[in-house]
Figure (cartoon, rainbow, N blue to C red):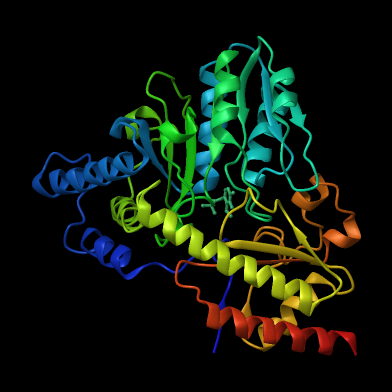
Length: 382
Ligand code: PLP
């Protein structure tokens, strides 16, 4: 029996999402731009999905752009906003961001002469707001900081970030890919000007995402063509996946709702018990990330005496599926850039293992994982 604890890498497509997509891949296959009955039906399915995403986020429907995923949403949010709203060529971010953010910023630096200030991070992955306040300049166009880190789960104080940035006239982009379903990601709660989401982290298929961008700010498109998605992202829309995206999002508890808060508390306490048990089972292990400001569903460790890859293999032999750092770094010998950014030495960063829970993960499964971990440690210690 497999126990899947790699939800931060990807989640299974939910039955509701799959079923909601199917009609738009089969009988109702119209092009939403076509002026015929099939086209009108596809158009209205797409717009209803956009409306549902907007209702979830507390914004207007025309502020949502469907994309091919989180990576494209990050690229469009950062490059699109920075190029269309130039107050100057200064950007602020942090080295613990996802590669999609780091590479978008790198593109602006290499091809458009932008300058970046990288905020420092403490050993738990947190920024210092006073450092952000001091880094903001009259020519700062954009601050890009993630809500929750995909490797260590630490959560940035995005509302405060938005407040400080706006006081100085800068825009804020936030990668909320990992936070969906766990934290309040509504726009009023975060105050951001752009927000990236990725469907496959919460039960929609891979290959669909969305960018929220505040209506009054222009976005320079990355993909040029027929002007779909309000001119922000050309190309015939993936109606089926947009419908699945909205369905999966709507199946989550509303941000800030009582139900969500209760669920979050339950998963957080399950995670705390799990962290405690891992630290006891593997005496050389260290918990990574912030103790309190963190996602309920991510528990990451470094296992000083064991390589991350060897540990993953041993755990997989026993049916436990997790990952070493992020999915992007897995299978790649380079130590996690996130751990390096928070000051972990390269040889220790290479021992990283991340367990990430889904909404259905239960304590019985976690007990089995702890047992498997004990067996893995014995096998690797031989
Ligand atoms: N941002 C974060 C924080 C992520 O964790 C990921 C995926 O792991 C992405 C962006 C990229 O999303 P996608 O896989 O949809 O391109």
